[in-house]
Length: 487
Image 1: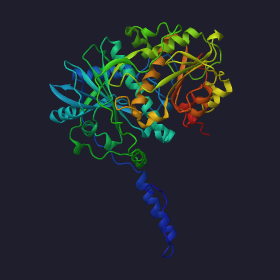
Image 2: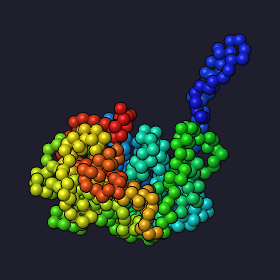
Image 3: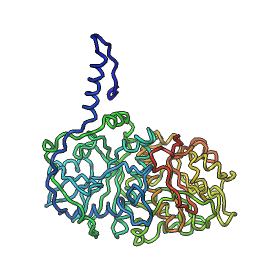
């Protein structure tokens, strides 16, 4: 196997073992040594209005958080991520000096690299059925890097990658709306030309989605960014990449294929159908006035644990109402994705029950105990005191794209719905004054039993709500994959 550190060879001469040992050491050193870093190209200020707009929205909607918390060794962001690995990147397409230009965004260093200008960019846009919004707008591309999550979580890390990207892209849409504009998120478009333009596949990246951002107001955070020219590929030199990432990428061949679903125009609609019953009287307003969303986005937090104390049922229903918030996407209005609420510990015990949110029906199943919640959450016992759990689930057959051509959704599309709905629930819980955290590591068959889900359903995402206890640490941010019960 490529990359093995030791290769067995037969000794053919005297003292061969010593010489072979020395040779292996040299080979090992050659492998662990790093190539010299090339000089960085000169950097200048951000000039393109569309790029300025996009960077300020990325800062607000994804990259920074104003939450008052101790972040330890990780930087606070506006969105959560499994294991705090954030397995995605961004690119921006905007007009610069009147020419369509593609920029690669380095969020950690707050720099942008100009990759291509002019006809190549225009041709890729045409082939992708996308366009840069006029008068200072931008096209923000989310690219996933599955390796970052899979190196910790194995194959399931690919699902976490898609869920994390859904949080980021969905929250970016909310940030746009919070400034009084209407963005449109596209998932159904040809990706080949744009992937080549952005050098995605060759660098083990996958294009996830595109958000069309109309011209609008922007903050001053773009002033902290710089731009350098990177259009000359020969001048860049070789890019270092672990052979492990290449092996991981090769293992995904065929996984990311789309369902072949047809193009649909973008239209505003909720990402999940939630029945408006007596408890959800505010469902028609969703997350409320968009003018208040920037504050929610900037201060949302993930709960580290739950105390086990009951919470007001009204607060849980107010959080759940956020799932009704419409987002403008090109996904079909109907979807196989469903949501179930397990309301198990409220100050109004008469409301404690399992609810099918699509219909509002109460299910005749016993409520799970604290020990059962811990088991269903892969023994993440600090989360076992959750007062409520929202499960997002689909029929197993839908994961294969079953159904009519218009209704079939790829795993990327289903996971986007889950991630974006998860972000809405985070903000809804924050608005309602209760704690929330999302987990992708859980015992799906056990949750199926505990929540009385249909026999053929698979749970894609679980979100827990309750009275937060932030005195400890969030175990899944540690090196081990606690979310998968790694020992």
